[in-house]
Image (cartoon, rainbow, N blue to C red; front, side, top):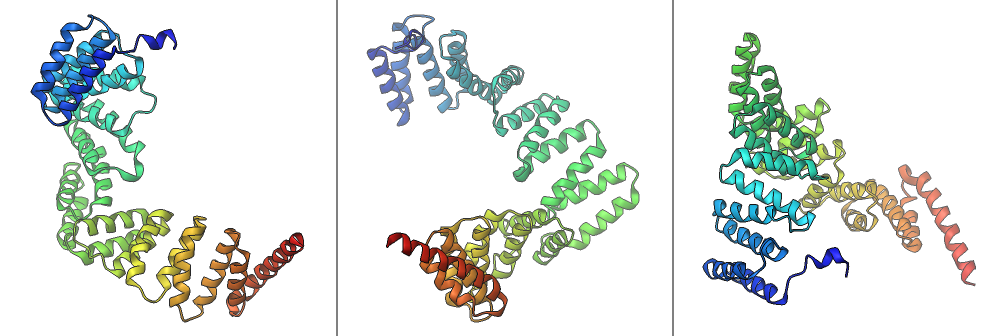
Length: 389
């Protein structure tokens, strides 16, 4: 074993006591665990790896009980010993920063979190959100804006409403009204049925001496009845018409989640189409899989099969395309057969592929393409038969 590794070894006796204490913590026998750890702390060498580990464990014990002040004290001692491995020490810094902020020790928590971020190669978005919230608490609104914007940029497709709210509040505190208007417009794109955002936007336009815009927004908010399903669906249609399908899908998802829009066949079909237009094929597939149970025509199965085909998920495409063939009774049968034939080809099942191409070639729209595939597959089957013989 390397010499560096040896300094991070626990004696068998220390290990057993720690293990016993952790078992007690797991069943919430915190007092017994604390007694064991305190007794152990008196026995281990000072400023050693073992002492740091015991202190760290005591920190976790108090943290589990939401005694953040005591937990912070022990985490700090463990870090100050400089006896922990770099990775453990780095992770412990983040835990300590969280505890300090939870204990409203904002100055110390912010400083430690900033230090941790500089050393962390790929910080999680939650770290920036935590830092932004802490800076807002100490009225450092400029730094709040800087850090929450990083979080928003890192998670463009799934920004939480609360992040925009932090950003909006910070801009308002700094009287940056133009920036606040932009944030409200972003919020309304995702949450158009929340009247308070419309009212805030109207007020900000008025503050900027844009009386006409303020009045227009106010009248629109009054007319929209933003808790009404029909209005939300019309707004979603408008977004698609304006070639903003992602926002259309977001609006429908939020409306369904909030119980304003029914998760019926028509609305889910519109949601799937919006995701497809936004090229979010996996999200579209997830919705279409729910829809297949509501549709006996086979058209939804065919659409789902197309999506899986586009994603080159050949095995997943077999089931919906086969289901489509069982249900369809029009010219779409030729399309489903052609697609299933190509899927079976990619799965290297030439016999099944040939069967589907033979079915598809009897339809006018697919005759040429199916015929080309059929001849190609027949040549491959013939070639394989020669190789065998």
